[in-house]
Amino acid sequence: MFNTEILHKHIENYSKKRGPDSKEYDEDLQERRERENYYSNFTREKILNMTREEFGEYISKLWAMLMWGNKQYVIDKMIEDNGFDEIKKDLADLLWGNPPIEKRWDFFRKRTKGFGPAIMSELLCMTNPKKYYLWNRRAYVGLNYLKAEGLPRYNYQITGKKYIEMYPYFQTIQEELEAKGFEDADFLLVDFFIWEELQGDEILNRITKPPLEVEPIPNDESEKEFLHDEVRDKIADIGRWMGFSTNTEVKVADGSVVDAIWEATIGNMGRVIYVFEVQTKGSIDGLLINLLKSLNNPAVQGVVAVSDEKQIKKIHNHSMALEGLSKKLRTWDFQEVLEVHEALEGVNESINKLGLVPQGFY
Image (tube, one colour):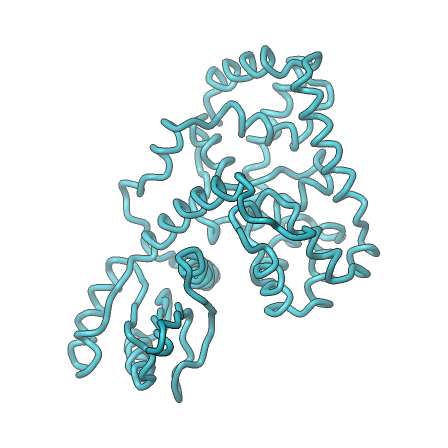
């Protein structure tokens, strides 16, 4: 399963620092209970009747939102992309629906844009911390440190089935904490423990380096679709963090709707647009023609095809037959996109914790 010797060492250390009788533990417990009380109070009916302001506060309080300086922009985008009534219904079904969690997870994941596994699992855990665990980058780091096997490295790999498969890891940690005297141990305490005991610069530096083995595009058609959408959305995130205005699924020229754009206005020069197309399935020639058409827009200054190493070679070879594209085409390995996003996510999360920019009433 994983290295219980390492786990026991850290639980022992955690018990000394955060024992049930310590002031620090009482503060942690109070924060856990406040979060649980806030989110569990949103019953199915209350979620369905939320106002936009209530929805904004509900989402902005999540730890997964710490990486965003302008939370309101992200929240508005969620509403715009999904529809407000639809997003509330889907949230209510995810958190309070009757089907097994793996089915609710996959249904929500397929229907809803802007909600990654970190937000989904945090909402589940905050609403019912005795039943659902929280999965995010730090959880991956912690379980990898414990030498757990079969961990999903990227969001597109976290299906409902995988969420269930990882449950025993978190349950074991919860049971070991309980055995050590933490009688109120739940999955929210497990998250506090992972953050405090199973992190560290040495661990994080090792984990966030690109893996030695290059990840190919998956063969499963559903995974290809999820990978495409994840990479597309993270390209937009990266551009936004760099100061560009970004969007996805944008028409930039007649006959050319592209996956993502970065856009900037430069003085009196007007707009500058960079176009990105993600290739996980479908025709390479179709992707290249789309990029070529996008160059008909004079504001488009660069076009980028994103795929894996094998497909990138084919893209370069095919592009040679398209005069006007080959010299302007750039390529980006999808795995690099995911790694860059992860690194920038950590940087933004750390900076935003300083609270240098006011967050408004949220």
